Length: 323
Image (cartoon, rainbow, N blue to C red):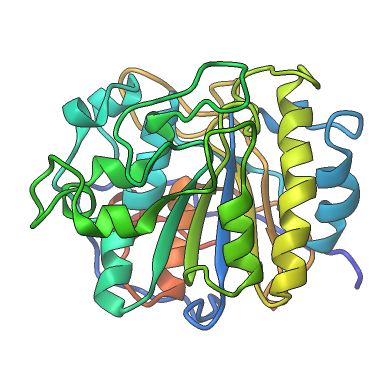
């Protein structure tokens, strides 16, 4: 299929809004409710750091299959704010500093809760998490089993983590939907892989590798974060595509290493120019020049599931990459 360019519109990247907006479904955003969606998140890499030596699978195999955005930006620094913002259209000062869920949890609406209201199933898959809905980090850096709770947005929302909307001991919904991908041995994705192969995953799946496989830490044997995430993708994406050729797979990073992009905070500027790649039969292949960010991704998901756009997504353009 020939490649093409989608010329950037005059719409600028928007400032964050503070409340839910009315749904304004884009006619170009397809319904996502009839497909499995897998959103896979890497860590701390600028688009310019992704090269053919360290990321041969991402650039050589996946990029030609999908829609590649060259001007896609994270929201801010650090990790937690980007994960929470990606799922709720906002984040707090507390979350910018990666403080614990016990300190930074919020009573705000979010995509997970919106999907509940539409009867759309969701799962949040966390590699190396020791138990469902674990509220604190575990494992050790560079040991291929480090679960970072700051990368698990579900535990920061009162109406997902708690019982009856009260944050505390993990409630039944969080335990049922916020799941380990396997055990706490090195790089264990066995439970997730079995669920994919048995058609037992949800309609929407957030997939977060551990802090070696997502590229957060430089771990053996590669000792190269980009190469580690590339190796993770080379194992997991074929499992998804072979089991479900109709799946939509989205790959991005929580943040980059620069301050490029819109400034959503008085404390940090933009979160960096990061990879965005979407794969699947819904997607028109090509390289796209239109600017977007994690709020644009949220707007796209919310339009695809026919729910209201939240926070910064309310004033964001959806990502238009569809057939």
